[in-house]
Image (cartoon, rainbow, N blue to C red; front, side):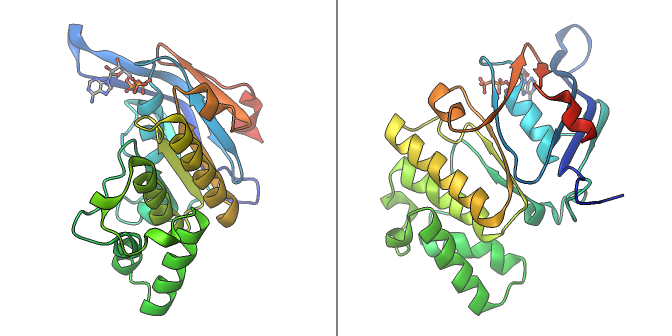
Length: 231
Ligand SMILES: Nc1ncnc2c1ncn2[C@@H]1O[C@H](COP(=O)(O)OP(=O)(O)OP(=O)(O)O)[C@@H](O)[C@H]1O
């Protein structure tokens, strides 16, 4: 039953194997972890260690081949159709719609969710301002730098006000300075809506900005505070 201490995500011994037989790859071995509202977590580890796969499990984009993943405190997260309101996703490439302006890109998920015009406009402006991108509102994606586009992708998530934000290598294609601005945007977004934030990263200067570190090594997750699962 949900209560104030229910985690947003709870993984119990969740594993994911890609393929079958001799070519099968165990990307994640039984991972047990929990994400609570307000958490700021970096998932770190070498290339191929399973960081993205774990994040996809937390996001419900992949189903575990064994073990369980639940979202006890996230209304709608169990249903793919309503999950985007509960879980905001940021990927390495921002995938903005090229024919829409920045403002229209940020407004689109709200419109699709049936939010009325006035609050859509207000939330769009507020979200762009929060990630320091208000001045970009009328631009097309092709006119943006990689870092600006990624900040707009953060604003698009922020406008939906999800209680959980998951970012998969969000600075992977950016130089250091642009990457730090994107991390600033993610932290500001999470603070603004009181969300939990989980970020996979190779970059020590990104993980240094987040207080909690989970480590992946050859598909095995180490969580410093496993007791967090039973908090
Ligand atoms: N769709 C897939 N099909 C088959 N194997 C996959 C698939 N996705 C990932 N893998 C394998 O699972 C393992 C973990 O991959 P994953 O992308 O999760 O690692 P990662 O730590 O995020 O790596 P990187 O930092 O390079 O993105 C790797 O061996 C990878 O080749």
